[in-house]
Image 1 (cartoon, protein in one colour):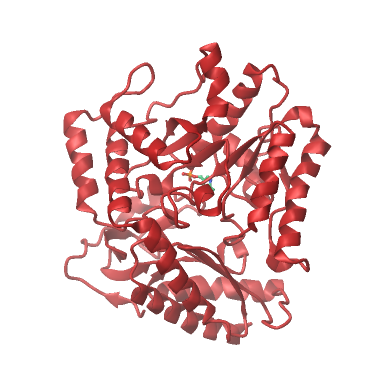
Image 2 (image 1 turned 30 degrees about the horizontal axis):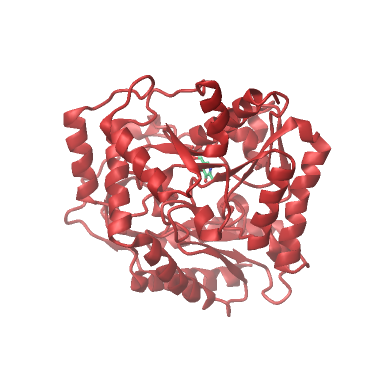
Length: 459
Ligand code: PLP
């Protein structure tokens, strides 16, 4: 997929001095006048993006695992414009708005049957924070105020606000901000590729590690377990179905709530509206964001099961938590139009079928000397690279740095957006639009092959 300069129809170059005032997330301050190397993305159409110089890219990451239905969907823009004209904003604290009502109804219709309430937020971190607070208030209402802690998994990313960051198990993201909120502990992640056990044995052992963490912390102090259906950080880590069965049992045995963080893995990403439906487990809470609006507006939500709402209903208690923009009417209108597209275009089914085509194409890279494995579900896939395909030997620090210096830029030069060698980890991750064309994904794989052939010679 060689990148191409397309001037016609692309946005005019917008790279003046003010770029130096935009503090990019997780990146150093832009040096000088900002006119140098920073990529400025200006326009999107379907699965394609155009930067401010008119260069075209294929987006194989749905921006940041968000844009599930692709760019330029005028139905979503029109729904947002109509709502902004009708009622741009009103809160859903003591009151409600028509789009928030309609959206909550739609979400509950699509969610697992035991879900009862939808608590709207503005994104994933806010959903995770709200879920943790909700588990605390739930246990308090049941006379168990000591159950404040959560067990999450090492390496998992659950967001960056102080609560969510405390649940996040990535040391390099936590260090600068310690001490964090007390009470979040981490059990080993599921990572069969680096284990000598069978995937089933490994998954079951890693489920038991959650029980061990609860025992260590004291069962009376642990109120929740946070897991993702497919763990993003670490490169689409997939557990066997028995893992989820066992984690569900452990949650019940220890009277802890099971929270499924589906910030990425919902709205069709892994082939069903919710990731837990795709895999087949029943969480007590689901956190979601990103694909809820396909990124057309910032919005998240916590889905709350009837088990969790019961003590609030019985005692007539409020969840003492709120956000000005939770359930924002324009974002809710975007979400409704987005969900209508996912349903009417059958994008959950397409994610499964196009995902298996894409997966097979990625597996075709197995002849490369640095190919480790492909893993993931549906439209959420990653390749792990290794120093030696046959022995699975890891890269040395020097080799890892060489990959980091070469692969991300080379893939962008190919005109592909994906996540390459993220935070030094030897992974390439993809989350294409759910309506991506299989032939375009074949070209993405062709680009990745060209880059990895050159990378193999560097390490
Ligand atoms: N939880 C998971 C699983 C995520 O992947 C993310 C972001 O990628 C978050 C939470 C945080 O979401 P946000 O960046 O919208 O706050």
